[in-house]
Image (cartoon, rainbow, N blue to C red; front, side, top):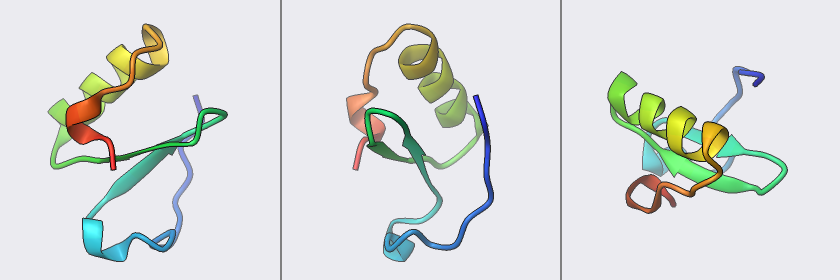
Length: 54
């Protein structure tokens, strides 16, 4: 896993965002619990977190 700081990535209106490559799945998140869910579900288990997907 690699975390990079970036500008708005053309999604400024959607709050903080994360994109998971190579799939190119975009997520928005509100807090560390959302990030933990993305890490566990998508990165560890390979399942997209639909409730946070944008």
